[in-house]
Length: 250
Image (cartoon, rainbow, N blue to C red; front, top):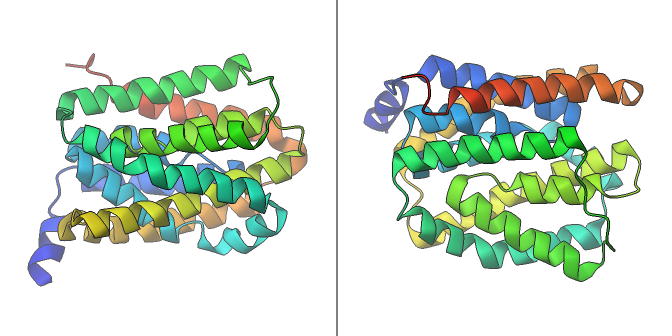
């Protein structure tokens, strides 16, 4: 264990990971999403692909814990179960595809998907059809696949809930609850497959504290009536993180 901890703490770019974990937690605390969109482009620059996915998932399990009871009270439990059910089916497929993806391609893919998600949010692109059980289950499958292959399960679910007529508090709570339980599903799948490696696991646990502090800060400053301001701040942070991961800086 001491050797594992030493290896985790000797990770190049550890300071950037700690900062990204804190900022990602803050964004999630006031918006309900954004952890992976902020953290993954940074993590993909310094960690192997599977390590980055393990790190963000373990970090993210603990960070939002203080906010989960309230999120569960406000979220749609039926939709949450349907999302997680199909996520569980598609996640192993995404993880299998990940084994064939080169690190440079992974890094670029994470950044491009983050930017694509950001563009969709800014442009107001929404699904305008019926949000029935089949649509919800399809969204869960897409989220599971993307979570496995690039560590970003959030975009399909976020876009689905953004199309919902529910109040902002309910949308925020539903997204937060799904992403929390997604991390538990991912850890379970990796453990069953024997892919839950000790060094990135310890690294993820080390990131949990700054991420938790960020979540607490974000939740404390959240005010529903200032939703537009929070979105602008979140979008700006996501953009900076995603752009930093593109292979255009030499």
